[in-house]
Amino acid sequence: MVSQLRIYTINRGMMDSWLNLFHKHLKPNHEKYGIPIESSWVNADRTEFIWVRSFDNEEVIQAKEEEYYSSPERIALGDQPNVHIAKTEVRVVE
Image 1: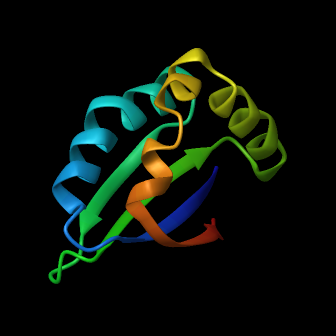
Image 2: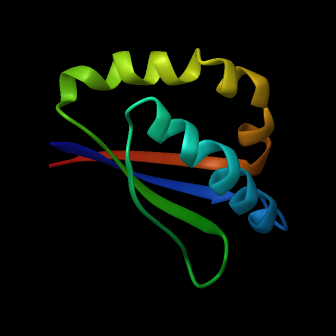
């Protein structure tokens, strides 16, 4: 198993909106397409959203991401996720 530690800097004043979008749409859709979300947190300053998603191995990440991003559910969200995010960091961990 391999995981991605993802750290998003959320635009000022948008954390509540981001959390709603994440829990209502992004998390269920990730799980529907076989990308389990292990956990998620908000830092004390409410400026960063930290989460971990997992894959069977590193070789399947690209295919799983393509399946997720091309899904009707994700396409319907359009740019909604991106307007919340000022900066993205992704670290692959085992």
